[in-house]
Every structure is written in C-alpha cells, then in structure tokens.
Length: 234
Image (tube, rainbow, N blue to C red):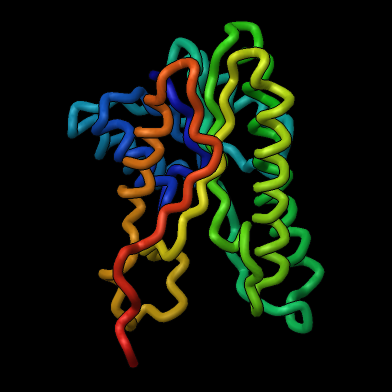
C-alpha cells in the first residue's frame, strides 16, 4: 500500500513512517524540513524500505496540493493519508497569545483539511482509500492548561467522524486515532523526567499499520492508544 504521512520528519510522524516502511508499506513523507526528510529517507532505504519525500508547509493550501500531488506521482498512486502534522502549545487562555492561537488553528485544523481535500478526489475516483487523522486524548477529554490545543483536537475528532459519513459510500475509510502519553522528544514537558513508561512513536505506527490492513468491508473508526504503565511517582 502507498501511504502519505504528514509531519513525518520527527516525533510521532517519523515513528509512523518508519514503522510502516518496516511493515512493507511504500511511504510518502511530507514535512517542512528537507534536512530531516533526507535523514528519514536514508534511514528507511538503509533498511530496504521505500520512502519518497516532499517539502511543504501545510498552512499553505496551494503548496499542500502541489506537494501531495508530487508524492502521489512518485509513489505511483495513493491508498492512504495519515494526517499527523500538528503543533502543541500548552498554555491556558490567559497566557496564550493571538499569534499562538492562529498558529494552532492553521496547523492542526487548516493543514489537516488542506491535505484531506488534496487526496479525496483521487480516492473517490478509484472508489477506495483510507484517511487516518491523528488526534489526541485531548480531543476527547478536557485539557486544563491547554484549552486551545484541546479545541483543535476536538475539531479533528468532529471533522473525522463527520467526514466518514460523507465519503463511506465511495469506499473511503476514515479513522481517528487518539494517542495518550507518547514519548515524542520534541514535545517533552520535562526532559529530565523518566519517559520509558510512555507509548513510543513506532508503536503508534504499528497501530496505524493494523488499521490500514482491515478488510475492505470493515472499518476501525476510532482507536485510543494508551500506555499500560503509569508515570513514576515523584
């Protein structure tokens, strides 16, 4: 299967891209950093996987359309899109700046929508496809101290569940994934704390591989991924 992953250069996105490549998927990796994308492609190809890359800022709808079209051409088609790119800002409503609010909306909602719109016409034409939107546990439960971030993830949930009702008649699946505590180094709140109890980005990728391999007539519409362990006591 040929899968495009947004925000693939680091964190959860890199884990997803790496895990899918190991599972035999052909990966189209999209992110803003050409250097990090080159490193990802080198790593995947060294392990005999297939990875194509495109540089793009998902906040730009035209650039998103062009980058995803380029990845589709490089891959020779597209079977799935994993909307992973996201911005995390943990501030309450008193302290969040207007610029930070708009950055969250532009990345976590607009970028996801632009990427989805880019692949939907192809999927509708081929009467199949799978869109996986990476939300967060914060897209289901309140997040004090991060209300704006939670708002964007609630939006991802609402968009995903509603989109499924709009596209299922074309054979297109939509899944929303809610990772709990993930050891994404770029989003660590305390670099000195222990993180071994958390879910790894690669484990999120393995879950995505299972979702993508469901039978044509079945669908996992929502999936929570949580660590079994608990954080160490202070």
